[in-house]
Image (cartoon, rainbow, N blue to C red):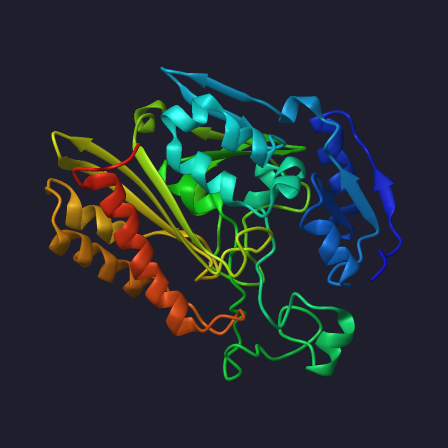
Length: 331
């Protein structure tokens, strides 16, 4: 599977990059680490006229922490840097764990936070070669008219399969977006559309330039649990992220995020409503686990069965909450 022909543009400043995107409009694509974009190009899923390589823009890198203002992460910060950062491990454990599970060490060295937050949605019927997809009549997301996951509908059910988004949602993260019109911020929870085709709120001339995590979430205990066939390389088939604040054994705050089972990562807000003000008990954990499986809706988008993925959501919710909340709780 060879790459399609394209013009490679390498801006050195953020303002130059957004102008290049505006110049080429829908015929341009952004590439940074390339761990998702390049395989998709080789599979024939995209054929841009111009590829805007932003990895040389120095202002988009780095990890900065201030106890008063919180954590700032540049979009080009590698997943390895985040996973191994002592600051992130100490203050935002759930993010360090999520970043450390992405793919393999080699891919984490290349892959960026911004790229992980802007991944393409994935599906068994979509992420294949052109020959394979043609034999199946293509699909609604690319070149076809039918969603093979739900053939009777008009919606694409390809799933969001990134790891860091769910973790950052539990930390009330905001993202910064740059365009020729300036910069704007939005909560990460509002960035995703829950649509397998039109997945994120990012214009053709916009770049996700950074992530900010508030200081008030620093110190929350964190856990990220991930299902995948192989312990390296594979995208999640289900993922659960939990951030929890305890005081004398009482849950003062808890946030639980899901990934890889819906067309968007999302928070299960009912978990917080159930557990705040409670002491640990198996019954409380089980109630939260049931809230999780009511929210997660895995379909036949992967090699694993929806039933197994749904059951693993319950297992992961129990495991993460017990780890963080019981008398032997973790960090």
